[in-house]
Image 1 (cartoon, rainbow, N blue to C red):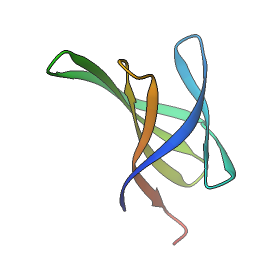
Image 2: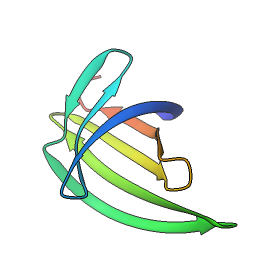
Image 3: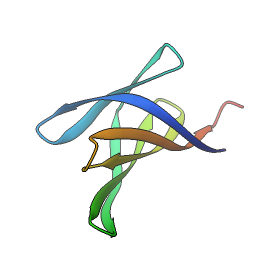
Image 4: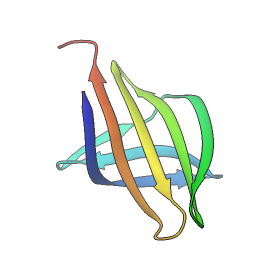
Length: 77
């Protein structure tokens, strides 16, 4: 499911460790792809991660330091 909502992400050693979305905490168990791109003068980092049975794609805007949840897929749904 494609989403474009602000989220809170906790980082340790430049790696996302958890995400909070709609009051729920998702502990990140596995990091898949990490890539970055620029749009104008803004650098974005994109992380594809797994929390249990949930796949998440997170985007960090390094200009504003805001995180967005771009994609959410739960294998149990």
